[in-house]
Length: 464
Image (cartoon, rainbow, N blue to C red; front, side, top):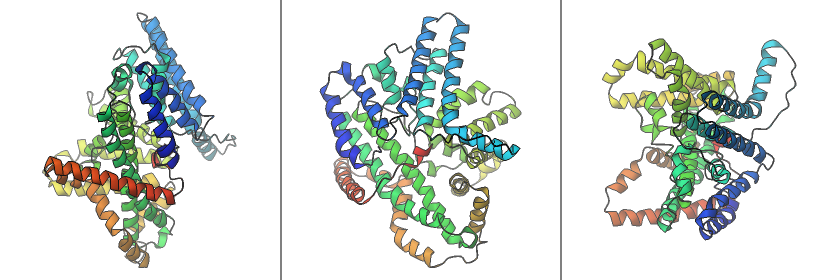
């Protein structure tokens, strides 16, 4: 089940909210837990057991650490077991086939691949659950003794399959006491509709262009077609993922929760480091808190900082997918951040702001080629097409695409940089509120019209 699905919009969500608002507060977390299981089981009933296993592991680990609070060795051993078991679940189901295939390819062996499917959202809910035991070991949080309350945190349907990655400390107080009223409902609906418009009206639309471009022969592809295609994907992945995050945050508000922001106009950045402070913020914070800082961060020598940076970005790439292109994509960003910090920092500080922004966007666009095209040979062919080695500059497909998608591109670029929001802030409050209300109604109507004519269209980050 996805947020932009008619079953979710017209059956699951209304019924869930009706029951949630009707029951006393003491039972609201139980409703969250049960609806989270139902939401996840809608598409993959068997894999609910994996999520419940991860939840049970960390709940029991938390209780054990609390029981032996004064015994450092037991606490450390419990944390180790929790982390190893969660990473084992992730490794078996997400990376098993990749590891076996790599070993067979390198050593010429014939290890059979069980071909286990990837449970949706496993990278998200295992990271969420692990954050609890790690923070509890560090004594940053208090133990949660109520299993239902802890399970509600892990399985909460708004963010269970594609984030934001909500740490226990973000919502621990809200699990016990939160504001649930018409004001939070109104704010949540506004944010949800905004995210749906991003996904349905922009990401799905402009993503169709990338699908058409990606299916063509890269060796003979005109440069303009290649640039148009990867520009479409650059916008598609932003609107798809940030749209999901907006919808999740909006749903959280409807339920009385304040989830952390996950995007802050990343395409406005003027450096790669800034881009990653604005893109998938909760993932970056997770790796910073639980990998980069424990390794020493930037407190040691230059060599140690470079090592720590490369480890984090290797893991970031691997988190996104069990494929060599994701590993190379992660290391690509690690190297760029190292170059920015240690080699080109002073030069970039003297570079005009507009030029720094252009350089950042070029680096990101080439990064998306590496991210989206899994075959190294195909990646090279596509980059060659971008650089003009495919022959002509443009063809009839290019011109038709420009004609058909010009308005969508202009709107997407404007929205991705926050221009409409800046314009609204300059208007009188009443006029801005009226425009917002009209925009929400029009956007929701347009989304419903699109959904009626479309089939299943999952979010891109469901694959991770």
